[in-house]
Length: 49
Image 1 (cartoon, rainbow, N blue to C red):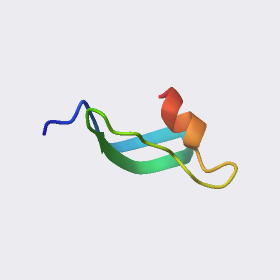
Image 2 (image 1 turned 180 degrees about the horizontal axis):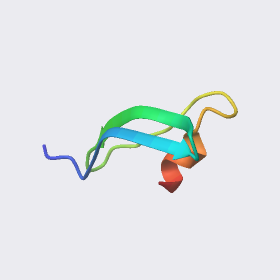
Image 3 (image 1 turned 135 degrees about the horizontal axis):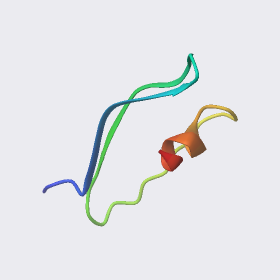
């Protein structure tokens, strides 16, 4: 089955501060996905990119 979204090695910087490093994932049709982690881990930032 082909993915509907594929993210590879995503990185995010705020000025010179790295806030996300090499985030990779694939999403497939009909799949339910959740992001979990502690406060400040970058869950909302990842979704906003």
